[in-house]
Image (cartoon, rainbow, N blue to C red; front, side, top):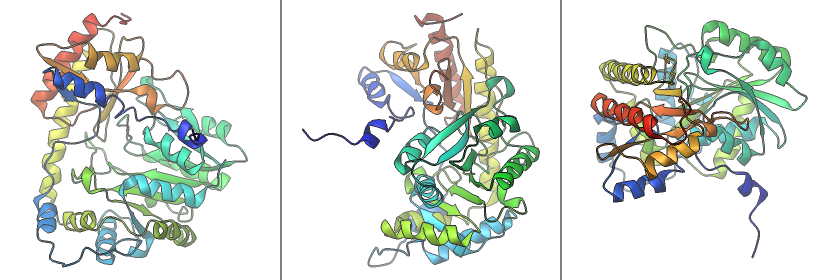
Length: 399
C-alpha cells in the first residue's frame, strides 16, 4: 500500500471539529447538543448580502480576477479607509476565507524550515497552515492569569533565531478574546523593525470590541509598510462564514506581486461569495450596534456563570466572541468527549473545544477549554447549567 506523506501525518485534526462524530451520535440518542465548540454565529446574515446573491443576473458564473473582483476590492479599500487604513484595491488579494489568505502570506514570505513566532494559545488552524507551508511555529507563552496579555518583550527576544521570519498575532484574539493595547502593538513594532521581520496580523474580529475599548490595527503604525501583512474576513463580521471570503492586505508591493502568483495558481476566489461580500459592505451601522449589544450580554452570561462554578476560572475578554476557561478537569480532550458520549442533563449537553489544540507546546491546555458564545442568551444560560452539572459528576474532576 502506498504510504501517506510526512506532511499528511503531521497535519493535526481540528480540535474544533474532531468531536463532531460524537455529537452526531449524541443527537441520534435524542440528546440536544449546545454547540459552543465553533465560531458559527446564529446572528442573521445581513439581508443586503443575501439579496445580492438572489438577484445575480449574469448568464455565466465566470472566473473573477485572481486577486478578486475589481469593484469589490475598490469598495473594500473604502471600508478600510473609513477605519483610517489607507490602502488601494491593488493592496488587496481576495482569498477563499482568511484561511487561504494566511496560506498565501506564509508561502509568499517564508521558506520551508523558516520560523514564525506566535503567542499561545492561538487559533488552532495556524498549526495546520504552518505545516501546509512547511513553516515551524515557535510559540511563546501567554497566561490565563494575565488574561492572555502579550508576553514580555524578553520572551520574543529569546524565541528569535536565524530562521525567524515573522511574528503573528490575532487581534482581537481567537481563542482568548484578548484585545491588544496600543502599547503592546508598539512593542511588536519595535521587535519587527529591530530584527527585520514580517508582522502577520489576523484582524477578522475588529468589529467585536467591548467595554468602550477600541481596536487598533497594526496598519495604523508608521514605518511598518514593508513589514505588515493584514489578514481579514467577512465570515464573522457579517455572520457569513459559508461564503468563504477573506483578504490578504499589504502595502509591500513585492509581497503582493508574489502572492498574486499563488492566487493565480488557484485561479480565482468564489464568485458568489464575492458578490455577497461586496453587497455586505452596505450593511448599516445599526446592524453592528445590535450585534455588539447581543454579544456583550452573551459574554457576561458565560464569564459570570463559569466564575461561579467551583474550581473554575474565566478571564473577561474584551473582544471577539470566545473565552478560554480553566476547569477542574484532568484532561480537556477526555472531558469534551465524555460530555458527548456519557453525559446529559435533562436531555441536553454541551460541545466544547479542548484547549490542547490551541497550543503548540505539548501538555498545555489540559485543564482549559475554548467556549464560543455564539448562541442566544437563553441557550447559553441553559448550556452553562449543563456544564456546571457535568463538572459535579465528571470522573476526572480535580476539585
